[in-house]
Amino acid sequence: MKDIIIAPSLLAANFLNLEKEITRLEEAKIKWLHYDVMDGHFVPAISFGSEILKQISNFTDLFLDVHIMATNPEHCAKLLIDAGANNITFHYEATGDVIETINKLREMSADIMIGMSIKPLTPVDEILEYLPYLDMILVMSVEPGKGGQKFNIEALDKIEQLRRYIDENSFECLIEVDGGINGETGKDCALAGADVLVSGTYLFRSENIEKSIEKIKNID
Image (cartoon, rainbow, N blue to C red; front, side, top):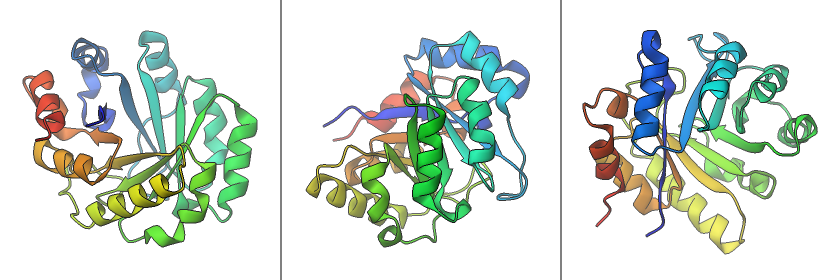
């Protein structure tokens, strides 16, 4: 079984102690950090911006996985890339022209990873044509914009469909899953074919992050 990447979602951290929270992740041998950017328009909530990301980038060597939940994502992408983002994921539902958005992001940085996210109600068939141009596809297993929601089991079918299509075509595109990921749902997603699991509440509210991570990764 492949090694699953765990990307803790900073949205679930204690905002008054971000330095301590990030240090906990580093001590648990975490490699990725999921960073949500919300504009209050595409989703109701408002969250972190580029200045906080810059401070985090200066503090840690974690891979910064930035998920933009915003209308016109390319408008804020450059600031986030300059602040230290290693991956930029935009929403399929937030852009009128996927290829144009990808091209704009590539022009901003040749080194950046580019991902695209789909909401729970968006069919996988709609986005298959874009997989050759993406480094990662993010399957939302909850409605974007709020932490602590229950996992939508229909996401498993999407993961399996994506896994088959990616493997059959030999695409180099990671499958990431975000929403309601815990010790049980994480295993289910990994078995369905996911590469990266975003987990927020389950990890940050855990007294022992290492043990919680092992519960996700311990696939029989």
